[in-house]
Amino acid sequence: MKRLIEKLCEVYGPCGDEAQVRELIRQELAGHVDEMRVDALGNLIAVKRATEPGEGEPRKVMVAAHMDEIGIMVTHVDEQGFLRFTNVGTVLANTLPGSQVVFPNGVRGTFGVEGKPFSNEKLELRKMFLDVGAASKEDAPVGVGDMAVFRCAFADLGKRLLGPNFDDRIGCAALVQAMKELQSTPNHVYAVFTVQEEVGLRGATTAAFGVHPDVALALDVTLTGDMPKSETMEVTLGQGPAIKVKDKRMLAHPGVRRWLVRTAEAQGIPYQLEVLDYGSTDAAAMQVSREGAPAGAISIPSRYIHTPTQMVDFDDVQQTVALLVSLLSGPVDLG
Ligand code: CO
Ligand code: ZN
Image (cartoon, rainbow, N blue to C red):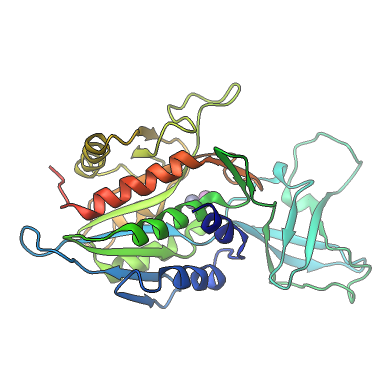
């Protein structure tokens, strides 16, 4: 599975331009699902129909992981060939100096800051520029409207992994792996790889309308409270998948939360409860789609989210897959 994670981390896929990620996932899932389709916004919807009878009609279970990653977009090229840019998704200015970005044509660049060198002032995107090695405006190999993503090399540290975009390629990897391992199910399972999550859960909004699920789960990353002088937060790297209780935009459906907790306990899968003070996931959009759907989320703990180098624990990833497979192979029980 590490190879799958590495491949998913390498492909270019900022918000609104997720085609390469979609193509890779489509190849990975071929033969493992009954049907795949792409909706108008670009969400990949992979369906595995119920293989065994359950009680009554099979339930539609939608599991979403977002394909897009944060990045930057060129807004202006000056006479000397320096690029001004804006953020696509939440980009933290202080993480940019020293990091590398890559455009779809392979051009790489790094960031500079206006003013004196070696200053420790608080950074602002508007006072920064991107240097792709161009000597003049004419020489610039990219232009206005082009998007670049952050690219450090994927690294396998043994138990832990480093990558540029585990938010949410690690969720995509876990969902792909779960669909490969899922043998039989009483549910109609919709594995949905969404677009444009980082700019406001846009793909999940249309995908959930189209799928009209009976129950919805998001698979994403969450922050941890386990580093020196971290803000207090219960989630620790390596302690298992985090079952969402609340984040900035949603309260998980209590029945969904209980279903996840019960399943984890029955399978002996370690888990943690997540109360997140920042951000949200596709579950927030799925929950309020149409007339509403019971929704929850499984979060893979990650350090350094929304920075160019993120860290996850491989055991957490594997346990997330195990939890997902057990959930999907049994009946939905929101009691
Ligand atoms: Co994010
Ligand atoms: Zn995310």
